[in-house]
Figure (cartoon, rainbow, N blue to C red):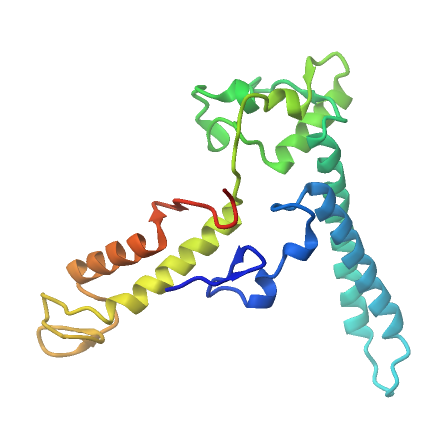
Length: 238
């Protein structure tokens, strides 16, 4: 399965070329949290404007449920925008953060490297947005808390980050490619040259024999550069 590039982002079977066309949203190669916040705010306003305009359509149709849905989604985007804006200030170092998590006192960022935390998904070397907001809130609750900033806590680390959402999308892409590939291979178990495997009684099965499946996975993984749950290289990142 080939990937085509649209404005330096890969187009996958789970999205259209228009969805992957995102370079216009950012000044650099990756979008900043500040850019995300501003774009989310613009979309929130746009949805609320659509709701207002839909109150008096050119054709007499009652759109009240749609109008309320647009307003609701606009408010939801507004809440997301506020979180993104707060995170943008955090990653710039404008907001003091607790050096450790409340309760557990576990470190995060560079200080978490080599730690043995087993709860909450393991060491928080790369914190989630929710964790960063929690660390900022902890300082407000306890002003005497020892603090740091995001740039300080992440100092010395060079991380090329890809969200779990992107990893899941790439996994679906890989699985789709494997499902197509397996149908092109000859099965040594049931001896079909292509198409679905068959049982000993000649019945068609949508589940391929293990050896054929394994061969398809190896072929696709080599072609896509897939390694476990992650791609070997993140498209668009040097």
